[in-house]
Length: 152
Image (cartoon, rainbow, N blue to C red):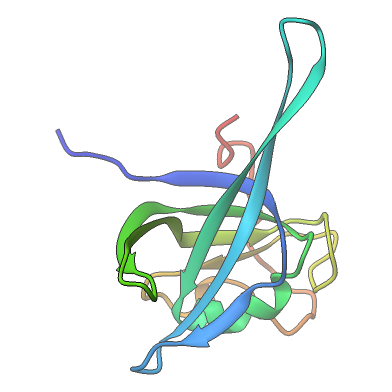
């Protein structure tokens, strides 16, 4: 039997996405989203646990959608978990765990940017943006997630 590496998150951006280009010219957008779990402690006290997730989005999708990824915006992200090793300025080994996004849907809540009130979807991984929305801020026909797409 094979293995599965899949992350599905719905959360809010902590700050605007950052757009960069690799040395070879490939576009990459990076941003962090927060997911919050609410629960009641054994003592009956309401508690929250917030986790931050680093997201990386590559290619034409990153170029097309990064301006919509603004602080406070709620997004649905599907991707795979990757941990990479790198060295800091002092030569010490460091590790970063991030989600390499395969699919992203802009949801209605949160900060500025386009797409308020209507989800916008973009897929990555070699497909053209014709599979997703036109990110011009105009009303577009897209596939919104349905109950079968969300695992809870």
